[in-house]
Image (cartoon, rainbow, N blue to C red; front, side):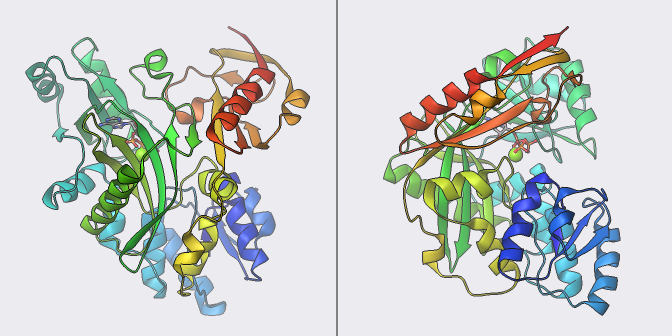
Length: 402
Ligand SMILES: Nc1ncnc2c1ncn2[C@@H]1O[C@H](COP(=O)(O)OP(=O)(O)OP(=O)(O)O)[C@@H](O)[C@H]1O
Ligand SMILES: [Mg+2]
C-alpha cells in the first residue's frame, strides 16, 4: 500500500510494479498520476490518518496488505497509523508524532544531547520581541511547529516587523504553534540515510543552494542542491553520528531518515530537522540513483515488506554528481515560456518540470511550491554538473506580464 499517488510518488508505484508486487494506492484525487500504475485505488486524503486507517482495514479484510509506505510525502503519521492497525513494519506512533512536530523533536534532541540550533516556543508577539531584543546581533528563524515546504519559515531580526512575522508564520501551520530558533549560518545539507543494524548508511549528501537567501528574505527559499556536497571524511562521519543519535532520540533505529543539517562555524553538524520518509524534489528517486547507484526507494519497499536488507544494497556503486535548480520568474501572468526544445538538448539532463503553464499566474515567492519549475542534470563530477545546470537554466526564458 502506497500512501499518496501524486507525481512525486509515481516512482514508488513503478518500482513496486517492477518487483511484481500488487499495489494499492491512496489519494484524495481520483486523477492522481500514481493511480495509473496501481492495481487498486482508495480515495482518501493522505493527511486524514483516521479515514485512511478505516479504509485500509476494510481493504485488508479482502486483500491482505503486506507492507505500507510512502515517498516524498510528509505523512509519516498516516503511514505509521495504518502500519500499526495492520501489524506491519513501521516506526512507532510516538516517533511519527515527533517527526511531525518540530518542537517535540527538538525537545528530544536536547534531552539526548543531540546538536541542534537553540530554540524556544513563542506564544505571543510580546514573547517573540523579548527574545529578539535580548540578542540584537542574532538572526532568528520563526516557523510553525507543523509546517512543510518552508511555508511560514521566516528569517527575522530586529529590523523585521515582528507582528507581521508572528501572524504570517502562524497562518502557515495547522496548529498555530510557533517555534523560534537561532539562525545558524553555514553550509546547509540534505541527507538521505538508511539505518540498519545500528549503522547509518548515508547514500548521498546534497549541498543545498541558498544563493537567493537575501533576495527572498525574510522567507527562506532554497534554490536546489548539488551532490556531492564538498565535505571531508571526518565531517561525513560526524554527520552519520548525529543522524544516528538524533534518530535514536526520537525512537527511530531502523529504516529511512532524511536530514536537514547545517554545519556551524566550528565545523560541527547540527540537525535542523529529521524526517522519517524519503524526501521530495526527486532526490531519492532521481538524483541519488544517478549520483551513487543506490535505490532508496527499493530499500523502503523492502523495509515495508519486512524483508532483510544488506549493507551492500545501501552502499554507492559509483560516485557521480547531480545538480537541481529552480526558476524564479517575477510575479504576474505568464505570457510566454521559451527554450524547452533547447533545454532537452542539454547534456546530462535527467529531468525537468514546470509547475505552471502559459496563462497561469506566477505568485510572489513565499514558499517552495511558488517556484516555477526545476531542472536536474548529472555530470561526472561536481563542476560538470554545476556547469550543465547553469546552461540548462539559461535555456528557459519566461515572460511575465506584471
Ligand atoms: N535554525 C536554522 N538555521 C539555519 N537554517 C535554517 C534554520 N531553520 C531552518 N533553516 C533553513 O530553512 C529550511 C526550511 O526549514 P524547515 O525544514 O524547518 O521547514 P520546513 O517547512 O519543514 O521545510 P522543508 O519541507 O523544505 O524541509 C531548512 O531546511 C534550512 O535550510
Ligand atoms: Mg524541513
